[in-house]
Image 1 (cartoon, rainbow, N blue to C red):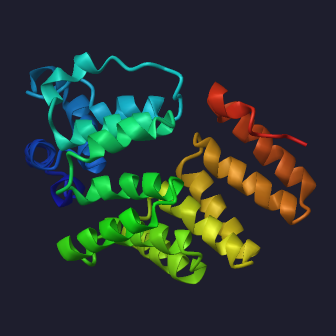
Image 2: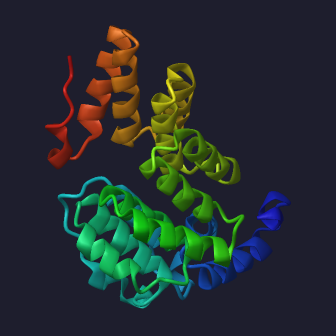
Image 3: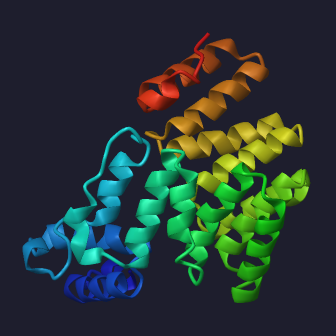
Length: 253
């Protein structure tokens, strides 16, 4: 990344290729590689997928009604990166059992623990979530994924102040972590800090303007704060962006 900032494009391209091979779950590596390979017209000569998988997955992430042909990514079969993408896909389709089955093969991946903690939170599985947090803490106490799972545990236990602190720690480590921002906003609402939650929702909308969840959360909060016009705008935006399976749950005043 520093090489890219310094204008050393050839060296930065080599570094990006190595980064993708070493850390196939890290979306940022794929983003930089896509930018550099397109810039130099080298995408067809690289021993990597023509289109970075993360971009494809992100374009379908919330369109849970669409079916993805995973065979076109055979070159990544078995990698942590592809397994995480598949698990996210099934999670967004509310196919929690299948997502959890995939994640069970990624016990050594702290990144998988984030999504697994979301599933366990949905199932209100306190004992399993506590065990997951212990596992993450043993692996790396300061890793943002550990803070994320810890936040879900505290939220499930009703300890909203501690949950908010955990999710804020994730955002501090990774400012682009939209999901952590959404969960932070929810905890701030529980703590009756609507103004602070509104700021977090606004930041999430700026980071991911195509993510209906941020608009939906902000619209609901504005409604509670009696800002009717703002609530109507945000909920209308959420309704437009939401996949068909989620539109029915969004009520626009």
